[in-house]
Image 1 (cartoon, rainbow, N blue to C red):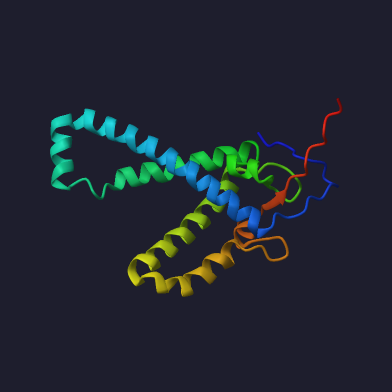
Image 2: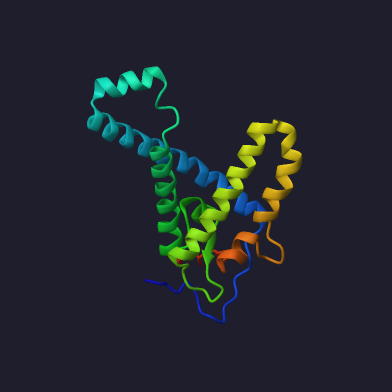
Length: 180
């Protein structure tokens, strides 16, 4: 169910690049923990399905190194993690710390489709950057960094991700201090 964050006539300033990057780093650390727990649960389920001894033998033989099902599960879990926060409160934990929020232009929470668009653009950009870095070494950062920056860097307050998902990342005002 969509949620209104503020009045339609109230305009919040766009979040600057520094706040966006700091929130991404913060959320990246949380994502690592989520992926580790998911991988652990997946391993337990897979080992119980095929047998622990057989799973251990496959692991020691190195045949489990590229598991497309695990990769798919991790991708879906990560999307559900971000999508849940983006569609409910507009803020992941890192975004709450840095007081930024994803919302529609009119101040409503984003839909799951908008969250999917944001997630896919971010994932494709990250994948392309990692692929270039892996294949061509650290010098590829000279080529990749501007492309990655172009996707996330806000021009007139909007990044490519914002435009493609028809949403915006805004700075949340500081709550008023309580008297007393």
